Image (tube, rainbow, N blue to C red):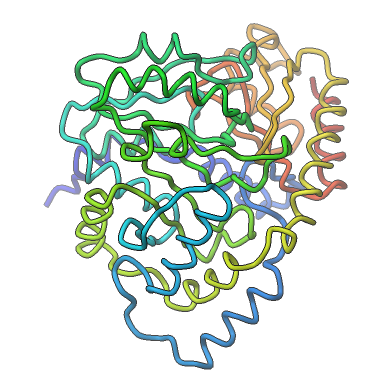
Length: 394
């Protein structure tokens, strides 16, 4: 028998963030002192009040299969959260709980897209968007932004990207990888374009909603004319430091929610019972319970910008959310550093790994070949040391 993987898997990209993390682990196992700034994972422990809720759920024997779309109590908590934080009225029937926000995104793509449907992706975009769209037999349409616009798509760019085949627009705010945050006026301007094209749906990835340094998050579903055509995606991995608990969710038009439940019923069924019970507690808590993490990320952002700003060749903007900086490092292209010719961002990221022992991620994986992504979800000590190493080798 021939060992022949399916075309869909052979044509799929490997997640660049996970690949770099694996390479960093491999080098650590060889004894190298690698500082990892590649993964988007908070370095905080899960808050104790959430841990206690999980322990209670174990004691209360929450061990059976869960409803495919999530516990009713959790869906009610999500509904209340949407109303409290986003002024969005999602009935529990419009909510589907999944095994992480990544599964939520995959569900939506599989439920809404038909072969050949185009999906507009403002670049840079999260690394998995493009391949998820391709798995659903859709066609990713990248719209290049750049540091000069804080990596945000303009209404003119959106209008120019729309064709008769356009089915969806996907974007994140706060954005992974750039940290950019769309304000209300910017979302209104995009919505004005979309209102002229009523058959285009929007996926709004708001997983970094609370890690926002500008003082207020705006959901595009709350803009006039957008609610019935927007899928709002969120989860608990980032703001609550619950990456391994794997709970994400959507608020969506009911027909999309039903489709996602139908699909999920044939793929994974319901998400983890203990994690769901703990998430009820997390979402019902006031934001003040996690403010210490947000304040620390804000402090680290300012530190990283100050330190990177001292390195010639790093072009920076000021990200207003998430926990990434996305410097333009194209000034190094064509140069030779320690005998290594830097042709592109991938070369530069690998150079930093091999010569500075610092793991970052190439911007090419996010649709922007001029940049690298640096995560500051690490301790101040690690950040200072990592940037000192980078400065030394460039």
